[in-house]
Length: 363
Ligand code: 13P
Ligand code: SF4
Image (cartoon, rainbow, N blue to C red):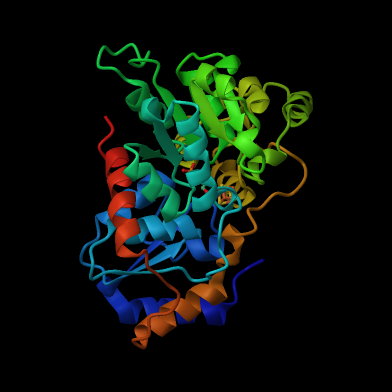
């Protein structure tokens, strides 16, 4: 539906009043009405870098979800304030790993005698606490666009074979699918090299021997949006659209990623469609706001872009940031009131930053 013209006008006016004092970041899964006011759009990695590169902006308005705003707060300087227009914009995947559960898991690994050879690699989609845990234990953060390099770094033993020194292992948090897909597709591991640690079961539901035999210990978390795509969705679309290219996000299940033609982050998805020839057909397995926007954008070039599954699938928390919330945040800032500030405490920030900086330094 078209945006309320009154709200559009108010957003424009508040942004104009704030000028360079405000910088608005928008994740690709945001609604069109919000993207319209973003100074920059991107995937999680690009937005983290862009937030860090705006020291002149007093206010960073993050149109995305809570863990992204936290990461922006960690990476920006002390004088800058990060605002999330709706505090209820969380991420169900990030909520699947709590600090207590992860500390308990580390105890389990310690008891199995493998904590000293295990490197935590945490997906950006995690709370600041989990990032701090990662930093404290010598690990790195990754996003879907650098997961391969993060794993190579974690397993690397300097000889470039990615084989790891002394039986090194990775504890991958919290998305089991990104972890498995990257280990198997990009590092050539077998599915048997991976075990799934279930935080709701004693010992993660694994024996100490299973933990010792594994190379990848995958946290039992997933994205509820990308979890909707199935092998059937891929088979159905291939039947429905002969000649279609299937392009999916690596948060999809392994069987979906294995059956797809292309796999990558939201930024990769956009780049791939940009470069696609006119007349080509694409089925995209990611969030619906982005797929719709791309379908409209490329229709004029004769590229046919469809949603991988017929059932509608927005990310409900990303969608919480809408034009009324954005207007409220911008108008409050323009009036000198900082609302919905996201602020990570100093101790957490110190170690979370270490892990984020390791990611930013990956080759
Ligand atoms: P990217 O934008 O990094 O691909 O991440 C997708 C996602 O699910 C963000 O929550
Ligand atoms: Fe979290 Fe999935 Fe939504 Fe991304 S799309 S914010 S991973 S629930």
